[in-house]
Image (cartoon, rainbow, N blue to C red; front, side):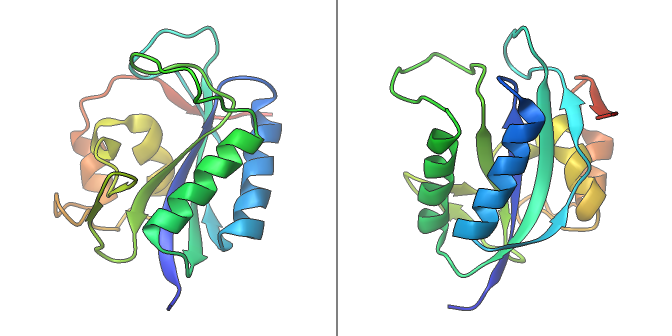
Length: 167
């Protein structure tokens, strides 16, 4: 299978967030494919729920030969290794040590099955996703919305605070 470009959002708001993001990147490279681009690190207020701690977010672009289902299963395993517990069902969003979301796949792949939805169905509604995505792929065109990430960010109604992580 040929290598495809895939964009993944990393997020953490529990524990040593920066260490967890770095560990996730290392595991993604070891298990999924080469990281070819990384956004800056961003701090963002929780989206869709109240939480004590803000998130640390980053978007990475990888080159992978995995299928969408294989990649999703591998990303879920990485989340679990880094402390994410999905054993208790929750209503809505909760704090977590690691969250890995597939945002885009290839130039225009659209996937919707019980395991994976690509492009991510809410990426256009979230500044914490679009801002780091624009660091590395501002001109990438959303295959359903037919707009660039920059256009989606300009039109985004989300008012959540997203700021570059400072030392």
